[in-house]
Image (tube, rainbow, N blue to C red):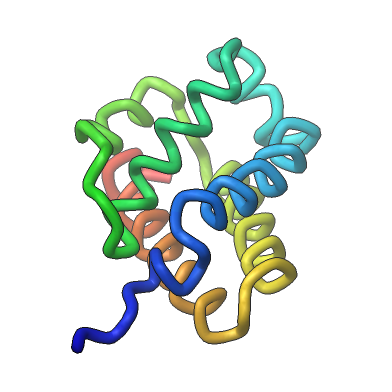
Length: 123
């Protein structure tokens, strides 16, 4: 019998959505990154489902995201403070709302994505 995936260990879609709703509630109010999202996102429920689809595939759940994540971030002109703010909030929320092992796995995934996006954007 296969070991449970990270997706299963964080509670599947429901657990992922709970984490994302809490996280993005803080993102939306953040001084540095809140305005970036406010300019582009008007339908938050739909956006959260799209992000959940991305994280679902990354954590071993259903692959629901259509791709192009990096290309979608290029026009945003993100700089180092944007990445630091997003990752800082992500670390805090993962550690506050997930068991320690799962939190660290989610943080490692986000850190790798952040590294790749920084390389692509030059931030």
